[in-house]
Length: 290
Ligand code: PDD
Image (cartoon, rainbow, N blue to C red; front, top):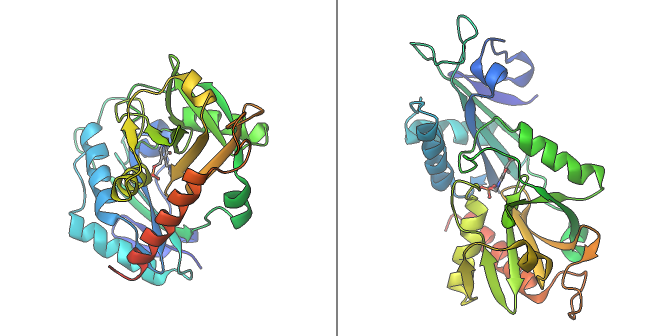
């Protein structure tokens, strides 16, 4: 039986119900977080709760819970789940309306939902061999820094890669790399890690931050700046990052091998292997509670 949290109660998922007039259901009017949990310890929970607060601020919705209350609920969900490695989903919507109306109701009762699923990280073969991606024009809105539940554009874009048998869709806006449909994207060129700069056109991933921190800690040179489409296509290495996929090498883009012409064409590169090792070591410190 899967336990979830809904509006102040822990209950079996099968018994959880939400009003069809909930603004989350009718308008996608809500925000969310996905927190990975390793050995029953949440990874970067403070940072996830910080981003949740920023998303709530951006959509003008008061946080229904204080940080300690969020922590208590997350801990309870983690304790009740059957797996050691989990993915905790947290969502806040602007709650139910009396009548359908785009404008906010005078009184708002947010709907708070929490759910734990098993964390399924990429299988070793994917990490060893890498994955393929396609590219697409980024047709999302101009508030992509908000982790909003209104994800229709992301779903359509992600499905393009599914239809092509690929793992992710890499998005470009006006010739500049923004991110993946559900991940951040990194480029390696001449031994330098390139990361798109944080702005309203991309979500600043918690994993993105960890990757840049690990690069700084280990002396890998990194540049955070606009990355042109041509630079992505000429990359020595391409990676994606997200809470559930961690760091994953992309070895093919639009049917062309990444790193073509180099020694690591179409296979994960040496800088990825380093970063992957650093990331796994860093995870272990979290599992030990360090
Ligand atoms: N999404 N950009 C987008 C559009 C995303 O959906 C995600 C992750 C990221 C990476 O963020 P983080 O490193 O904090 O997971 C970037 C989650 C996993 C999801 O929607 O399921």
